[in-house]
Picture (tube, each protein chain N blue to C red):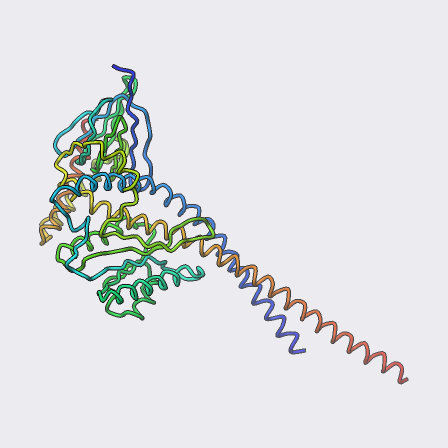
Length: 135
Length: 292
């Protein structure tokens, strides 16, 4: 690995989650998972609910991200996340409850726009469970 | 004698008022600290999203795609004003300054022979503006500290739907920007078309960068724009929340001081009267003794 590093910034609506110097960032983009190494081309991408993995000195750390955006400019990575959770903060039975509740809502909703929003919430909680299980 | 008693009662009542205002001041001071922290910790996100927005929008200008959310709908002259006030009173000129600037904005709009609609956030502003403009107030929500993000999301969803239905053309938000505990600045920010605070500085360097987009530019932008809208409204609510506590603290501080002054004055005249009565009694006794 080269000496070059990425400076990473993760922000959620309520607060700055972290600022760190890292070796590599892997994240779940809407068009598929991808990794960012130093020297990456300038990029703006949206993120689907999924994971964020950062690697510092061969140590890796993963957390759940509830969707958002990522911007990469000249080795500066900014992640705008709607939600950031660690594995311990996720409770599977709670997620399952939410999913079953939203599934009922989905049947009751009428407009496509409503259905879209509810479906997105379901996807988010499913991604949460998936994340929890894989860690 | 009865006058003396009245004065005593008055002093007591001012004293208990002072106790209340003092307590309210302290409550506001502790709430202020928390509100200020939330408002300040929300700033990085809103600044970041605005930066990404403007670098994206700079690239979009040349392309043919134009989105109503970014540029506004020029065919429709209705302007929506979002007025952010507080749910509770007793905070000095906090709410009335918002109402005043909404009124000025309305006069401005009328001069351009356009029409307007108002969305109120916060009970106090809604009460006053409903009285003045009646049906022009299309929506009024109370601000509940706990779910201000959901509230912001609801409002931005409402705005997006209404824009899709071509019910209005442009939109701006008027709120108290928190500057310090004693000063709030009434700020008007354009939401639609999107205000580009960072345009100047980003224009210089970002024009040189060719971004890769995933998925394409338009899709990201149509995802990002509603998000940005929500965040800007959310930011306004938080700033206003911190400002409200600051304004209340200042107002209550003044009230406490005024009550103190009033107590001093009342005490003075109470003592004078008491002394006058005593002197009167003494004279009576002395002149009685002399008569013997």
